Image 1: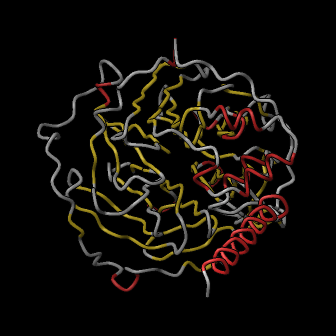
Image 2 (image 1 turned 180 degrees about the horizontal axis):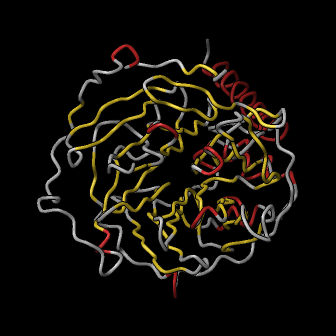
Length: 401
C-alpha cells in the first residue's frame, strides 16, 4: 500500500471516528428530562464558612481493610462498623488494630445503624433496605409500587415498636448514575419510613432532589434529610402540631451535603462531599441541550468536585457552630459521613481506603481527651468471623416474609 493510499485511509478512519463521536455527543439518549433551576449564589468561604485546616490531622484507621467506607456507625458498646465498596460490612476494634467481616450484602452499603435485637440496619444502594443479625434479611425493595432505585442512608427509632427512616436518593437513576440525577435536577428522590412490626414501607416526602443523609432529632420530634442537589437540609416533623409537614432546616450550604448524624444531645454533624462547583451552578439554569451534552461527556470532562475535606456542625436551630476543612492532595476526602462518639469524631468516605478519626477536643473545646496511646495506630489485621464462616464471602439476604 502506497503512502498516499495509507494517508487517505487514515483520514477516512479519523473522519468516521469524529463523526461517530459527534453523533454520540449530540444524539445518544441520556434518559434525562432536564428541569431548569437557578441556584442561589454560593456563599463565600468566609465568616462561619472561612477556610481552615482543622481536618488536616485526620488519623487513618483500618488502612487496607477496604475502599470506600461511605458511612460509619458506633453502637452503644462503642463498636465501630462500616460498609465497603465491595459489599462487605465490617466491625473495626482494638483502636483500629483488628477488623472482622460480618457479612456481604452483594451490593453497595451506603448507610448503617443499629436496629432491633442488636442487629444492623443497612441502606444498600443496589439491594434496598436490609437487616443483619447473623443472617441477612431484605426489609424493603419498593414503596408505593415504585422500586427503590438508590437506597442511601438510614436511621432507627424504637418508637412504635421500631421505625426505620431512610432515603431513596433517586428512584430513576441507580448507583453510579448520580451525576445524571444532579444534572437533570428532576426531583426523583424520596424520604421513607419502614414500620418494623407491620413490615410496611411508607413514603413521607417525594419529589426531593437527591435526598441523601437522614437523622432523627431530639426525642424523635423530627427527622432531617439532606437534599444534596439543592444544597440544603429539610426537617420533616414527626410529632406535635407540625407533624406531617416539613420546612427548611438550613439553606444555601457552601457544598453538597451528604450524610448527617445527631450526637444525641445538642449537635448535628453534616458531611459536605465537596464545595459547590461553579460550572455546575452555571449549567443548571440552562436548557436541556447543554445538560444532555454534559451528561454524554466522559466522566473526567464533566464538572468535578475538588479534593476538599469539609464538615459542618449545626445546633438544634440549624446554626453553624463548627466548621472543619482541609484542601490538599493528602486530604481525607471526599468526606461522606461524620459521627461523634465519646472523645472522637469518626469520618467515612465514598472512595478513601480508610476510616478517618479526629479527637473531638481538637474541634470542640472542653471535650474529653482520648485514652492514652491513641496516637499509635497499628497495622490492621483481619480476624476470621467464628459465628458465620460460610457467609464470609457473600451472604444471601432473603426477603423478610
